Image (cartoon, rainbow, N blue to C red; front, top):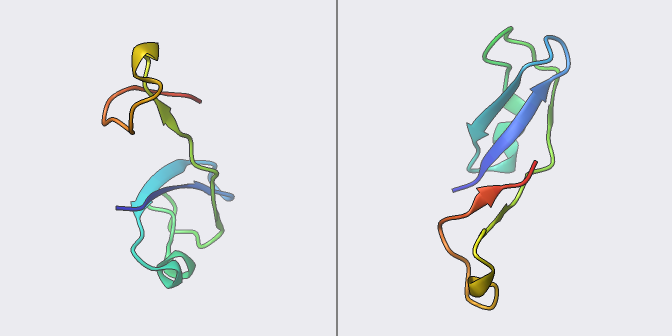
Length: 66
């Protein structure tokens, strides 16, 4: 499921939302200050810490790069 990270340009808070359709993004409001002035952030990615699995398919574990 697509969970996106957003930043509020008014209060500066970062929040995540499950968005099923792109049209829903235009209707989103900041859950902290109710502002519509938000932007979608570039998503981080996950990588498996164990290098022995580097040639295998994606796994559910790993750690997050920020």
